[in-house]
Image (tube, rainbow, N blue to C red; front, side, top):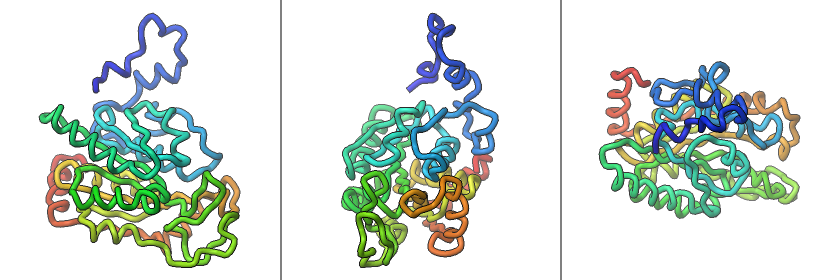
Length: 286
């Protein structure tokens, strides 16, 4: 991977859209201190998206992309879901896996990168929904934790299969009713953040995306710990506002409400993770 891949061909410069040129000239490549605060003033990794208006996932993706400390040397592995519609728009190396096996694919990519570039930092980040992470892909997810793969896993918890009609998932709260779950969920929400801790993750966080700065802090810490210690896990509440019957401008208030209850901010760090983060704080990167 090289900065050269982001250069516009001079022969095409007069016909390339201005936003592409802006991405080359005004983006924050190579700046480990890049921040969500630069989103309004800098051309970033995501110009537009094809998700629903007001979708919290769209905000989450923007915050995550703006928080990556090393985007030019980061590979994102995603799985089938609403986010699949976004990744063709991202100016970043992405790999689309089969539904559920994203952590296995990410593990293989990370190992190859360590072999091919032993003296260079290459971050691998998984972005997947609740179905891919906790239902169909649960075994792959946990096995990557057991093996201590140095990857960061981010779960977008919609609490429902949002792009296939509204089926319940393992992360749907008990009693919730959806179009294709008319009797309501029959068992409690799976506490995936606790499973991640019990399975060997060195950094785990649970939160909504109502606070961009908090998302930035969590993402950076998770990636830094994964680089040097082992697997990390971030659980983000990104509700499907359409499936829960809200208007397109209600997503932020919905997340703020859940900040006070089942998605109250939670963070876990092992002693090894604390040591790594202390080093990055001393370097001014956190």
